[in-house]
Length: 165
Image (cartoon, rainbow, N blue to C red; front, side, top):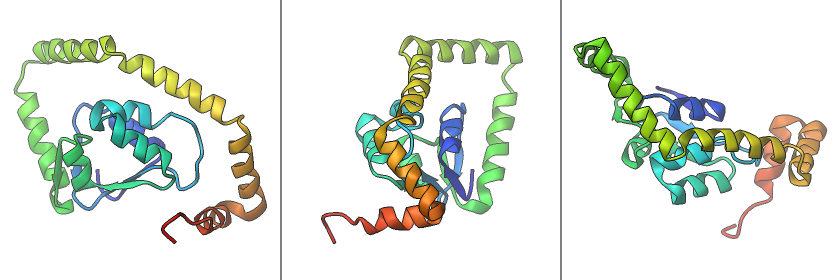
């Protein structure tokens, strides 16, 4: 992974078995408070609930590839030019394992994830996200998008400031 991994792409990455990310990659959450729980709940398994909550609660949250690796969101963070080389090396190492044993290992690990509730969290996240899309708060944000366009709504949201301004 290199460049930007934003929004729903972050959830796809969470579902990958192994992630090699460029150190300067940017993993991000939506710049406007849209949705209610599709991205961050699954990230709890990788980065812990405290960091997942922080990234979810603050619109426009970002982490670098280096931070993603340090938090456990990615297996490896390497210079951007080395991402494909490292991924290919890992793939070759994995390919040495007989396919039937690899399937058993993957099934065992996936079962442990399921027993700890991973699949249930993925489904619940989709439910909470659907509920959020009909909430008054979400309606006010989408009204701003309709009124000002996406970039305008993002500028409006950013202009609301925070306590540090």
